Amino acid sequence: MKKILKISALALLLFTSFSCENDEQVTVKASGDPQLVSPVNGSTYELNPANAASEATTLVWNHAEYSVQTEVNYEVQIALSGTDFATYEIGGMTTSRFVTWTVEALNGVMLNLGAIPYDATDVDVRVKASLGSNESLVTYSNVITLTITPYPTDLPKIAVPGNHQGWNPPTAPELAASDFGKTDFEGFLWLDGEFKFIAPNASGAYEWGNVDWGDDGTFSGVLLQGSSTNCGPAAAGYYRVKANTGAVTSDNPNGLTYSVEIANWAVTGAATPNGWPDPALDHDMTYNASTKKWSITLPLTAGEFKFRANNGWDLNLGGDSNGDEYMDYGGPNLTVPSAGTYLIELDLSNPREYTYSLTAQ
Image 1 (cartoon, rainbow, N blue to C red):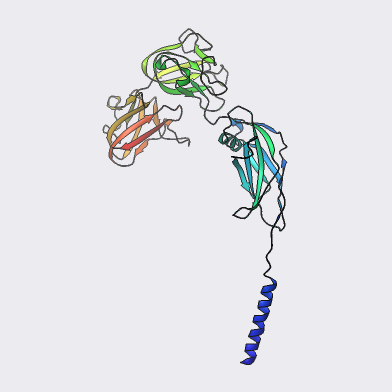
Image 2: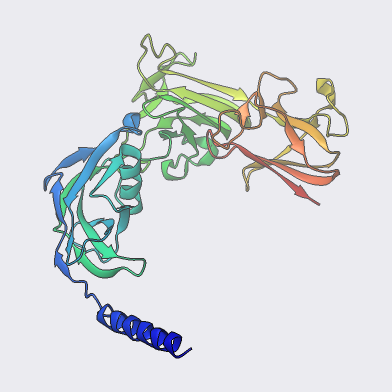
């Protein structure tokens, strides 16, 4: 028994001695800042939405140095030039020594900073290095300045000033093109008499003196840039308005044309009291000029329905069929989740971003 106790005591003594020898704390120190090496200071980028998924540029830096070998966290910071990073956007976080920006991602950063689309804007870029989740031993890289021209993320638009709103371009309803670089503008609006089409200026404002289009004088739906002849006249009503302001080409055969089509909306479908009826039994909606919405209150059953105009299927709206979260022409049937009385509203005031709502009453 004594021998066992002596051996145990010796083992404890050796363990204690070993623990004391290895209880020294290692102090970590920053010994070198990260250094941005690419792109070069003063680089210029003009962003193009047609290349949204392509690479805009890749930031590369030399690693920050610390007194021990350890993983380093990096954060790319971007600020308007000359603001000393008082406010900034984060352009990427990584433990590597590079971050790649797509055109779309870099454009989003620029717009978040308040850069004006189509205006060349200087921004300062730096890399922050730190250790651990509590961001210890922070150091910063050198600062480089880049000049970047962003683009708007909204679809291209023109406005429709006219007798319906007092010929005031800043408050005129808008039409939107189907995509960037397109000139096939469309929208829904109330018209009452003559009107024209006007483009925004470089700052996005609608003002007389901007590029505008009127009728070519034949009143056959042909546009003429700078024409002194107004389009129309249109009898008071709600219309789908189209205007193609681009030149006539093989890719744009409908260039320099416009059209107006009356659009009185109704609800129809299995979920409505009249089911899928003949045109005479559609449930006609009412347009509210203040809210710019069509509406009707109906008792509905759990089932399907759609919106259609002018008691026919040539112009109808259903659900989202292309993944943009907005209603589409000829889209899938819409559904009522459960039976009840609902306020049904159709909002076509945002061109090409059409929505509806069901509100239980």
